[in-house]
Amino acid sequence: MSQRLVTFDKIGIEFGGRALLNNIDMTINEGEIVTLIGPNGSGKSTLIRTLLGLQMATTGEIIRNQSLRIGYMPQKLHIDPTLPLTVKHFLALVRGVDKKQIVPTLEKVGIAHLIHSQVHVLSGGETQRVLLARALLNKPNLLVLDEPVQGVDVNGQVELYNLIEGIRNELNCGVLMVSHDLHLVMAKTDTVVCINQHVCCSGSPQHVTGHPAYQALFGIPGADESIAIYAHQHDHVHDEHGSILSEDGDAHTHCTHH
Ligand SMILES: Nc1ncnc2c1ncn2[C@@H]1O[C@H](COP(=O)(O)OP(=O)(O)OP(=O)(O)O)[C@@H](O)[C@H]1O
Image 1 (cartoon, rainbow, N blue to C red):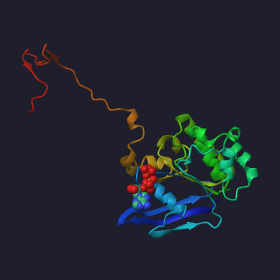
Image 2 (image 1 turned 180 degrees about the horizontal axis):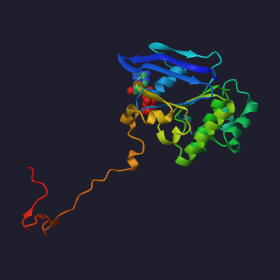
Image 3 (image 1 turned 120 degrees about the vertical axis):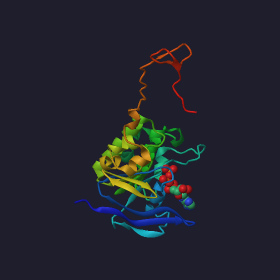
């Protein structure tokens, strides 16, 4: 039986009398991929910051397993582009890093060939892999990924989600990720938690996408593919001015409301 890594117990956060998060219950188990979704400003990053200890909860508590070790991958890499910094040197900056682990970790995320590249010339997908490598160097049993596929094209996104799933399978770590992409991420997720200040719904991807609260926020999955077409029953004929000719040949118009 897999053990619980983190339990959010009725977490609430207020700022200036405004509730950013309210009564959030959520659990992440070893070997489980949990995806946090929600509209802009719904509190996803705030919840992550609370887990990382960067934000204090106003109410409730976060119960952490004693063994908890988090590897955090931020949304973006903020580095001065004028600063010369190779991937190797960037990863060597990780506190307490075992430098012998840098090459195997880069191999794990598929970019060992970039070890001597400057970080600011990397593509979006390569940068995300460097950030993932940095998170892994912390030897985590919980990976926390804030929008891991940001700035990556669709093919690259699929590859990154596959990579994250592969790492979970290999390390049996828990994964908590924030995502805006609902379609690609769903296949790689065990549990989806949909928040909008509070937990709107949670469970398997199938359960959540069928939930009315999810559909109210994001629409019905696949609905955009089946555009409802207004079918005009053209059972009449027009004269040369566009007016409808009745059976007796008199002209009248479509709309008679004024
Ligand atoms: N330190 C803070 N002080 C006051 N308000 C804050 C603070 N941090 C976040 N907020 C507000 O909390 C709300 C939630 O922000 P948060 O960044 O958690 O949302 P999000 O779901 O991650 O959004 P997005 O999808 O746009 O990244 C926003 O309205 C934000 O302005």
